[in-house]
Length: 191
Image (cartoon, rainbow, N blue to C red; front, side, top):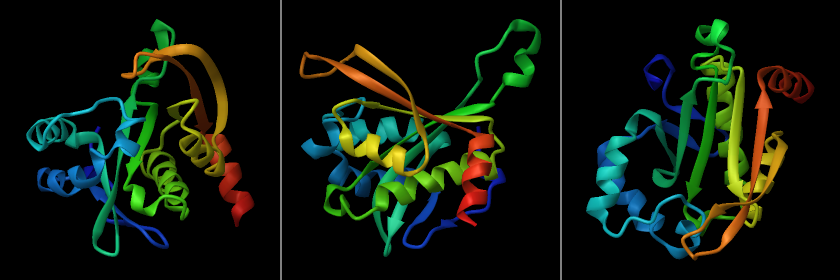
C-alpha cells in the first residue's frame, strides 16, 4: 500500500497528518516510550536505535500527526486482503485496513484521538476506497475503545482472554469495524 496517491498533508480542524519519515522517529520516541503509552502498544523497544529501526521498516503504513508544528501522534493504516473464497480472491485484495494510533499523553482527553480516528476513516474510505476498516484494542484500554465508538465504529467482537500482555496476564480484546456503506451513511447524516 502506498500513500503516494493521496494528497498530503491532510488537515483537520486542529491536526495535520502526513506520511511518516525516518527523521520523525526521534521526536516520536520522546513520548512513545512512556509507560502510559507502551502499556497498550504491541511492542516495547528498549532504545531509540531499536525504535528507529522498527519505524523505518514500517514507513509504508505509518503516518505522523502534528498539532501546532509538534508531532503528537503516530498512526498506522495497514491495508490487507479481506477474507474471501478462492474464486473471488482478486476482488478482496486490498479491500480492508486495520487502523491504530498512539498519542502523546500530554494531549490526552482533549478529543485529538477521535479527530485522528475520523481522519483515518477519511483516508481509508474517501482516499483509498476501501470496503472495511477495523481497529483492535485491549478491552482494558477504555480510551481507545471510546475513541473508536465516538468515530462511529461498532464493536464487532469481544474476545475473551485471547491476548497475552507483556505483564504476563491474558487480556480480553475488542474488535471494532466500519463498512464503507456505514461511513457513507454517517457522512450523509453529518451534513
